[in-house]
Image (cartoon, rainbow, N blue to C red; front, side, top):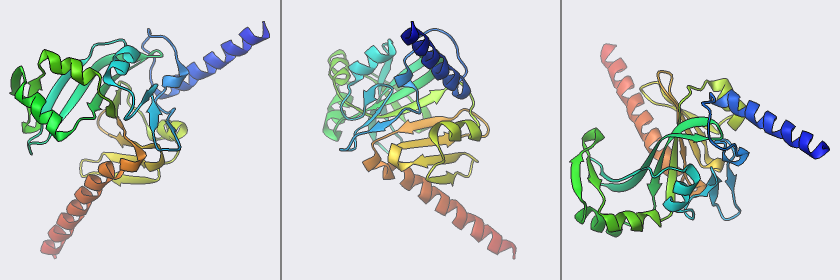
Length: 235
């Protein structure tokens, strides 16, 4: 009996913590291990979140974890860079709703071959192209490891809530748009705090965290240089 009471208290506390971060939307099996702030990094740098380990767990593992088939496409960016992404919409995990985007770990050679066999090409956002995968490539991609995870909660989050769950970031970098990136290198986490919209969480291996930080620093330096030049012209 005591064990049952203790378990009930643990579950209720976990639900209360989740409610402080996201608005419950009902449904889904509760699993405290799948909360977005529960991030573990192994001694060899492997990051695990949502019960998925980057570089090891496959897309098929994510399909089972989310209970959803998702939408898998090859996206060709405006600069020609190719990436395969799996989109999951309105996924309910432990009673909380969010969208996910998983980027797959594939070589440039593999991406080029998949592109050649693409079933259909259409326009994508940002001037890029969306390519539907051939049937055999869909099967192949499902068995490839996940490179990084983008998590988009339905709820708008404020600074106090994020700080309470994730702690204070090592660094904050503000974009010209007003979005502020909270950076947690040791956790492999970049949280984009958007004052005018929803927040975006990006999880990537800590040893590759510079990939997220470098473009932010470059963009900020460019914006500061432009502002300084405009100020000098006014003097």
